[in-house]
Length: 155
Image 1: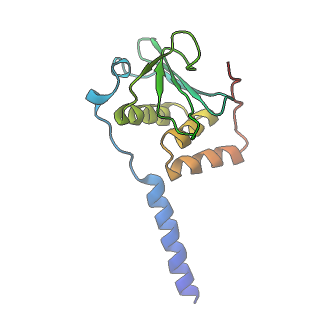
Image 2: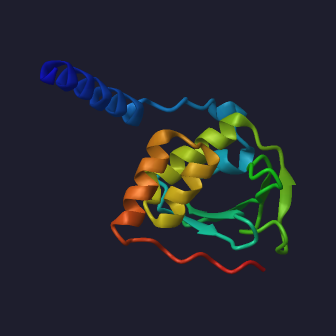
Image 3: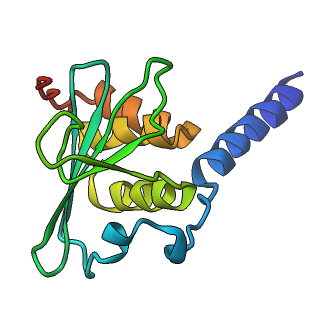
């Protein structure tokens, strides 16, 4: 009995490790929105903001030449993020223009957040934009360690 329990427990631990380390899908840079393709390496920072309007997400990306790109992912009624606005952190702010939100653009944003923003908002954004199990695990670990960041008030 003890041996079976050990084998089952080990199998579950191995399964969790595989799920957590499973690589994400790569993106085709040719299918990414041109504004994101224009970013020069290395990326200096990615800041993620969470708005209290139901969960909209704002991204501020600063590239290697110091250029700032602001993006907004508004939350829809069914709590999905299927729209993208470029030019502002929130879709209601001045200069926000809606653009096509392709899967490759989504994957690039996920990669940028994952590499450059380990804040509570960044981890929250990953759980909502990609929604992989490892994103939830990282977010809840971050919360349980008492490192949550405050959300930004809606416009």
